Length: 312
Ligand code: KPL
Image (cartoon, rainbow, N blue to C red; front, side, top):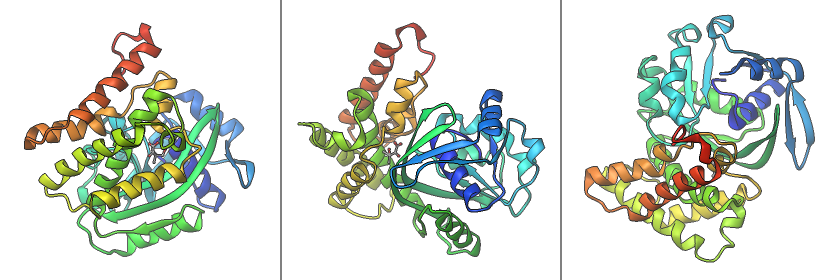
């Protein structure tokens, strides 16, 4: 697992629980030490608190080559994190990105041949609720696929492995379209939850919030279509996916809300920021997404005034 945040911990713990040899590659030594000594505690409403014990280190050379690398770090860290890949990868290692936002495949391609990269989107909801503890707040589906849309044995095997580990995963021949669809879901949910400090489910109950979300999605959809992206459905279908994602992960604090609360840099540039920059390139107006970007930066600065631009 490249990245031991909420999502990396959830996937790593599930795979370890299913009997796979899992190695968590952490950025910080204290994090690796905590996982090694205390394990990863995953809390769910159905099974309570369970502790899993994957191995953890900060040194990729101590892991050596692996069958698959699951990349779960923040989008803005992908380039730096991909420097850890060479000791882990042999010619048949699959590198699966499950990250939010766009640009991750390109960043990973700096270190790994694109033919070894597989992309995925996950609608799992999880957040770090304490040191070494993750709350699994919503079990949405995960979809993975080859970048060129081929149906391959390796992608089917990976999907089966994740499904067997309790992370329901399907295969798609249009993963780029699904990445954009997920980007639109994140563009609708993440910035508003971060600015309003509410869970994903609460967002839909607030007056005006759904209308803002719908406009953010409509702008993103126009940009995606102008860029020639094969979105899996029309605007109503995408909106249905947004509400479904908010419902399935209703108790979850979005990753962007967690980032703002913990004073971490957010992924706003890789989500709404991509809609704005692609919109500029294609001459499609994106005022709502631009405002959401501005608001997230304001919320971040308001909550952490001392940090003088160290994050966004
Ligand atoms: O991907 C997510 C995120 O928080 O980044 C959603 C689907 C909104 C779940 O919280």
